[in-house]
Image (cartoon, rainbow, N blue to C red):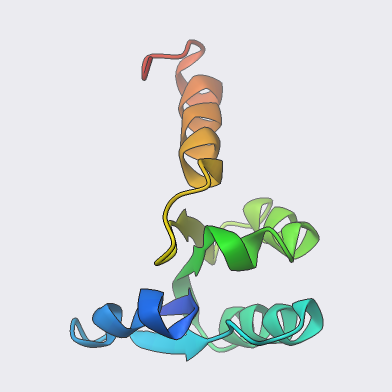
Length: 105
C-alpha cells in the first residue's frame, strides 16, 4: 500500500496531518531542498504527493519528471496564501488530453 505525503508551508500542510497524512514543511527550503524532499518521498513508496503551488513553482523540472511516471501522482494544491491557478490549469490540460476537448469551461 502506498503512502500519501503533503509538501508545503506549515500553515498549508498542517491540516492534512489531522487526516493521518505525512506532512513535510518546505516553506523555508531552497529549491534543492524541496527537490530532495519530493525525490525522497518518491523513493520511499509514496503513491500520492500533494505539493503546494508555491513550492511546485520552484521545482517545475522535478514535477514534470514525475508527471511522466505512473507513480507517484503529483497533485498541486493551493497554499495558505491562495491559489496561483497552476493546479487548475494542469487539471484542465490533463482532462483535455484525455477527452480530446476542454469540458471544464
